[in-house]
Length: 80
Image 1 (cartoon, rainbow, N blue to C red):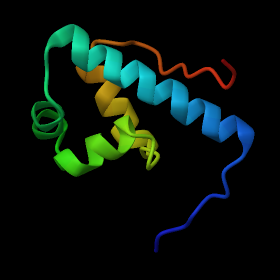
Image 2 (image 1 turned 180 degrees about the vertical axis):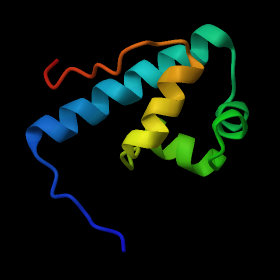
Image 3 (image 1 turned 45 degrees about the horizontal axis):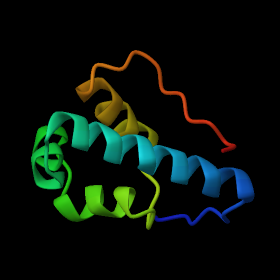
C-alpha cells in the first residue's frame, strides 16, 4: 500500500536540500543517473525523480545512496 505524506514546509525544504546534495555528488563523481541507479538497485527514473524533486526516497534507499558515496551520516537540513 502506497501512502502519501502531505508535504509541509520542512519536508519540501528537506527534499530540496537532498536533491541538491545528490546532484552535487553526481557531478563531483561524473556519474550518471543510470549508473547510480544500477549501483543501488533502483530505476534511472527513480533517481531522476529524486534529483528533480518529484519524489521522496524511502529511508532504506536514502541509506544506500549515502553509503554509496561513503557518507557515515544521513543529515538533511530542513532550512536553507
